[in-house]
Length: 140
Image 1 (cartoon, rainbow, N blue to C red):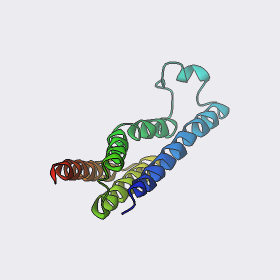
Image 2 (cartoon, rainbow, N blue to C red):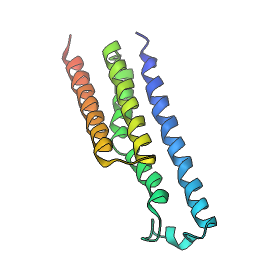
Image 3 (cartoon, helix red, strand yellow):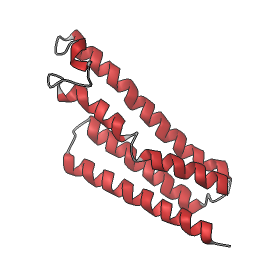
């Protein structure tokens, strides 16, 4: 297995993060142009005046900068130690797919139970990946 393949799902997650990041100013500017918000509404984060459809992309971006950090660290660790396997690649793509689905739900119909389920499953997948990584370190 080519060890650098682990950076394919990493690249996909990075692309998703930048897509969501792009959504933040687009929605903020649209809100300001429509007179729903002013620049002062963003002075210290987001004021209570900021409509949910404007604040959700920012919250989703924060989600993409939380648990995925552990995914990025794991990907680099797998690459450095030569621990990338087909199983771990499948899990990595599963994690990225679940995070993409989570973002899609969050940014569209925003059903909390669907979103929570996707979030929880993605965290379980990430935990399984870490266990596999640590188990691989103990192998001769």
